[in-house]
Length: 365
Ligand SMILES: Nc1ncnc2c1ncn2[C@@H]1O[C@H](COP(=O)(O)OP(=O)(O)OP(=O)(O)O)[C@@H](O)[C@H]1O
Ligand SMILES: [Mg+2]
Image 1 (cartoon, protein in one colour):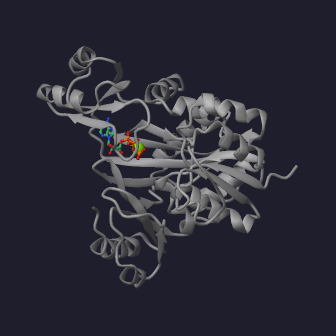
Image 2 (image 1 turned 60 degrees about the vertical axis):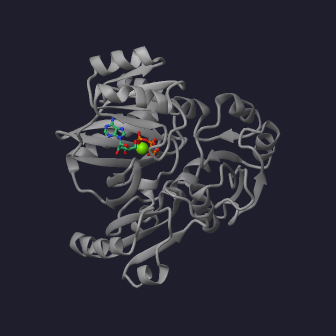
Image 3 (image 1 turned 45 degrees about the vertical axis):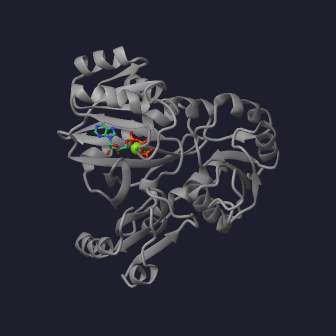
């Protein structure tokens, strides 16, 4: 049977870009999300309601050949019944591991992928112990539901313990040693049900306040790319993964330290829309719908810049040669991802010049 009806849990910008990539393939997407004006709901039909509403999830599954995710934090309990109705891709077990930073780090470690020193924290006492054992500075994070740097607190000194505990204490937490990284890299790849894998070139990402601001790709480092691909492949194989999977890494003294994973298309892969033969969105749909995976070859040198909190002047940005503009159709709010642009050039130095011109026109709020 050909799989062409894709149910997507969550209708954020990732879902929207999946749906848009689906049209030329003849793939029809149906969303489930709370708002009728969600970014995805603006471009494809949507069921409106809570993402964990059992009846709505069942309806989504019944109307889809395969269910996939814009938002990966649906509980395993809510997902399990869907498996009796339709295909769930990526598999539930993969989502469950990646929803919990502690389980995610345990998986990395089992697969001999280096991670930062870390400890589970359930009390203020355990936090004090962890800052002694692992040292300071360090980062205290909620184990679940963090994104864009939310649910995190950087501790510089023992005197920060109280404030950190005040800020996020109570939830299940993890404390990690602070990584003095030279760079942050991410690798996006896709795996089909038959076990075929493809990998995009590395992207080099710059964050501010825990949120991605801009990235450049391909980041050319054959050794790190080979290593990152080995790691991602190991994880994909271990999870019997289907779809796009992303790992974020810190580069510390020339070594890759895995930070976290996302069982979905990722912000650091948006450049692939214009920058590669096949985008991450198309390859995710191809993977979950059992179509052959597409070429991940880069078409040039790209920079991707997020629009955070406020939209820039579209006309002035579009005057930059080789720039593509993406508006997610969201209301402006501080720190919110509202859109992005991608610059595609033939040479790195042309890309760098256009990026610095674009950055003059983009403010982050
Ligand atoms: N242990 C660490 N050492 C140094 N910097 C860190 C550490 N953990 C997180 N950071 C910084 O904060 C950023 C966000 O952290 P992380 O990726 O863990 O959180 P997130 O909120 O899940 O982000 P995302 O939006 O990618 O889902 C990282 O990209 C990095 O810049
Ligand atoms: Mg991250």
